[in-house]
Structures are given as structure tokens and as C-alpha cells.
Image 1: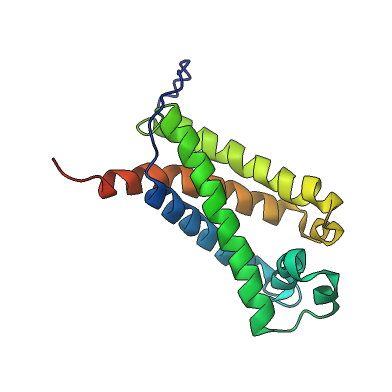
Image 2: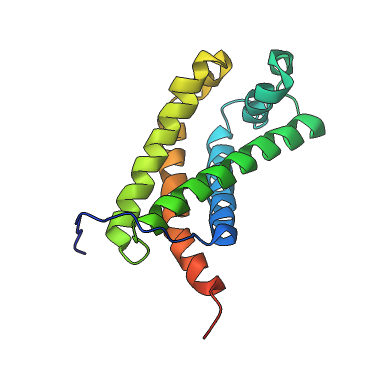
Length: 166
């Protein structure tokens, strides 16, 4: 596999927003499954839901880590909305620079975005939501790399399949 980093000019093409949102949902689902798998044996599998839901519901949500349908629903909503948002942003970059057919660049871009999201989520935003620092670590970092990689690789695949046949 050759990796070509040729300068690309911005193209004012419109991304396939539906494919971008779907790619964000797929990446979010993969990240969530990894988080659940890694939480086995390390306490409650619902702790992450409480930490994420506390962003909207406030720090009182952190008093428990027991299952709560309301907390899980809010956490899923936040998680998937952010996944869609980041999927849309990544699709705009992929389409804007015409990277859809360069899998090497897509892989690197996805990993860079995943690393950036980890830093944003667990170092930048922990200034406002200090409890998020609890999630810092290699497991969350790797899960975010996988998220970025999943979105970057699935978006072009989904976008090709949703284009009308001429």
C-alpha cells in the first residue's frame, strides 16, 4: 500500500450528509461496544453512561452508577449526536479534499481525528466537566482511534452506495 500525501486543493463539493451521519452512527456504535467490553470486570458497565449523561443532567447524575433507563437514554443521545456531528465534519474534510478514493490518507486522517477527539473530550472538555477525566486512559484512546478510523473508512463506502445510478 502506498501512501501519497500530495497537496490537495479544497473542492466546493457537497458531502453525502446521510452517508456522513450513518458513518458517525457506525463509528459511535463501535466505540460504545469497545467501551462496554472494556468495562467488564472493572466495575459497573453503566458508569460511562452516568459520566456522559452528567454533561446534560449535571453532576448529581454521578452519585450512582446503577442502571437507569433515563441516564442511559441521555447518554446514548449525547453519544450518538456527537458521533453524527463528528461524522459530518469528517465527511466535509474527506469530500472537500477529494480523499474518497485514497485509503491510506483516509486511514491516517481517521486516526488523527480519533486522537484529536480523545484530546478534546478528555483533556479539553474536562475543564468544564472534570468528571470526564475519569475516562482518560489507553482504552479510551484506542477506542477513539477506532472511532475515527471507522468513520473515515465507512463514509466513502456508504457515499458510493447512496449515489443515484446514471
